[in-house]
Length: 280
Ligand code: MF3
Ligand code: CO
Image (cartoon, rainbow, N blue to C red; front, side, top):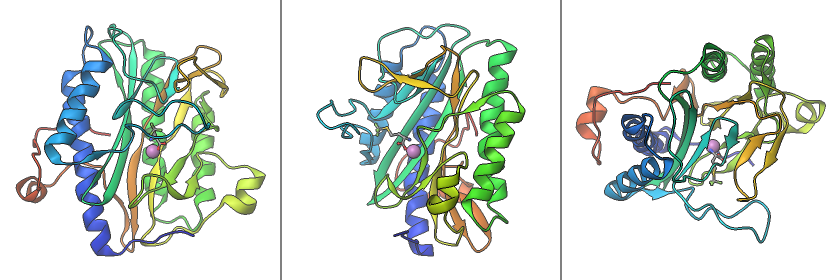
């Protein structure tokens, strides 16, 4: 069953989304060649502690029973890593890309967002991958103004990715979000016969979705690394990931993990820096 949220609940979810936004700003400030993803994750974990926010990824149970839970508050997926990379002590290099994905629960409600950063100077083909993936998320949000069913949005997302010669990852999808990080429905970034048949859902006020296209420069196939979490592209091509938590209202979609208004900066019950380092 889809859990529709009231306006009051969307207001509470906005605070969770803003904590996630600020966590990403703190991460973005640290990003440069020479830094490790372990260091960036540590800064995110410190910020959540300051906010009394619960990191949602830390100790998240593995999707295959018996395998280890996720060991950090953020996923750090560099270059050919698609999702669920574990923060490590490898130094980021000029020309790399890094996807940072993180979520928290604040005052009982969840937010989840991801983006892919260029490290220093990246080659134009890689920058295009980042731009197209971000534009795929933007397109989805835009289409939510008028779409009646999710499949209309997902179909356009997949076609947009394909029109640029890239591939949509199909093994991982977005999700409903609320009191828990993963709620119904599943939010795929493509359409298939079975999605049209039983996986589709109506776009209606009160729906909150974590929309998260993952796009590979090469083909869509991925494989699991021996660490049991990191998913990498099978062909070694780079991969990008952008995600926002989006609420549907009668007036259209609202980005709950987007930048704060001055009023929100002034009234947030946790530290918020008005300087915007990165926006997506
Ligand atoms: N944004 C991802 C998701 O929605 C991140 C989950 S990572 C995990 O599933 F560690 F929590 F599994
Ligand atoms: Co998510």
